[in-house]
Image (cartoon, rainbow, N blue to C red; front, side):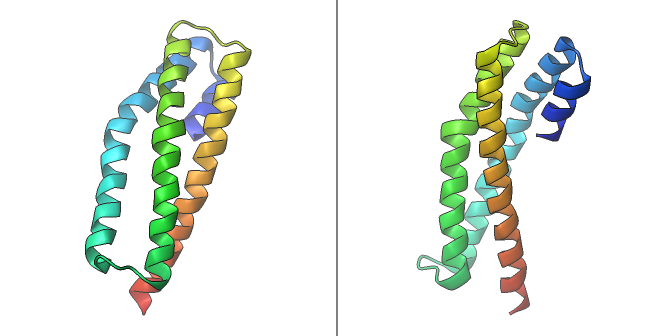
Length: 122
C-alpha cells in the first residue's frame, strides 16, 4: 500500500507500472504466508476454537475473503492497466477500492496480532 501511494504521489507512469507488477510478485509470497499463519493457528487451537481464538478465526475468514475476492483481482487489473499506461478514472476507482480493502485487512491483521500477544501471555 505504501509503495502504491508513494509511486502515485511522486512517481511517473513507468514507476507506477513497476510497482504494480512488483505487487503481483509479492502476492506469491504473501498469500502462502497468510495461509500458513491461519493453518498454524488452527493447529494450535484445535477443531473447536473459543474466546479470542474464535474471534481471530472469524477475522481471518473476512481477511481471506477480502483478499481473494477483492485484493487479488484488483492487483491483476491495476497491473494490467498500469502496463498499458492507462491511468484513467476506472484505474483510480479500482485503486481506491484496493486501498480501502487493504486498509481493512491491515486493521484486522493488527487486531489479530494484538489478540495473539494476549493469548501468548495467558
